[in-house]
Figure 1 (cartoon, rainbow, N blue to C red):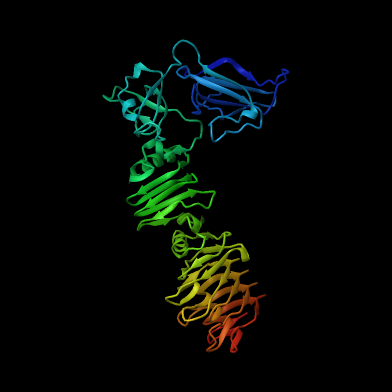
Figure 2 (cartoon, rainbow, N blue to C red; figure 1 turned 30 degrees about the horizontal axis):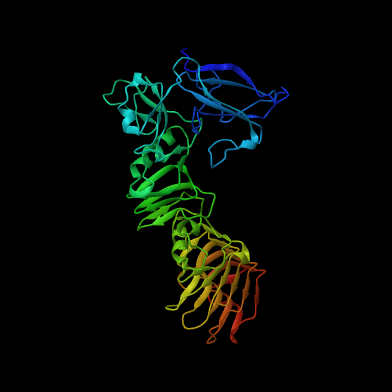
Length: 473
């Protein structure tokens, strides 16, 4: 078997402290020489099993580290607390034990050639360089560059991970990445300024990620989705990464924040079944005093396959001017009186804060607070829909013009519907007819339990009003 990696000068490394004691758990971070670009090392000379980066020293303080002859490396040894400093791209100074640069097997094979972009790499003669560092995909520092080495066996090219040279000499340039690395969509030339379409670049990156069971990564920037696009693999979004979608975008995002990541330009977002959606992903101003209706409706519409609408703690109230239209198989999960929705509109009344005219299935509304209003343009009810196998629980509804919760309609029979542990206060503020804390129309097998209804604003107020064709248990 041909060898493509070699043991570095000390094949079995031992992590030693200043007194010469082996240190289990210490870490060896490996980069391209003179850069902050991580590069893999290997557990054996056939380079088919990459070490983690950093390499973690075992219980005896040892690790086997093989390196490629075409690379020049920088090694940094840290203690077990080592972590990357986001400002420098290198391990934090307090944890660093030593740093060695320009580590090579020998000769001139460790020389690094720098080129401006992928086009320049395509024009580079294979024999002219061992390792090539590309400064950017189109222009230097656009995020699409990286390290490449020549692989004479390559016969398939995707213009991101594998690059075909001009003239098709046989073989090509292979991008060097760490084992199980996320695939950066900038590596495929995605425009992160929002000026040109990112569809083709994302599709190509997605194809590579599917083949090797990896995830995608979208760094900060705006990505224009100009036509229908399905991203099959999970994609991790940086804190300031935004998809501006002009068409249907099917996406499985990995998002750990409440920043805006989607900008609607006439398209739609479709998330996989069981996903979580947040209004904050669709507008940067959610919960800060502006109208949040569109953001919540976009977040709800993204759950057409079912999932969870996560309602967090806004700085003030969530402000809605028209109803949020409910969908089947969606759970709205709030944090009680810290997830407050307030109705504000001076031009029209609303049926309910959360509403549907259709018969829904498997809807759960849990732990939200609704603040209504009175006057000519008022919130009729807090929640109003018909459903099968649905639940409304742990909600606070205050100050609606008519009813707190309305279940059912003449043409839609609700069944297996549970309303439990809700607090309904000060409803019936438009004191003109009989209003209810909970009103049920055309229902069967309904469970109404442990609800508290108090301080009715109307003199003609019923706590629970069961209309004909209803059967409660």
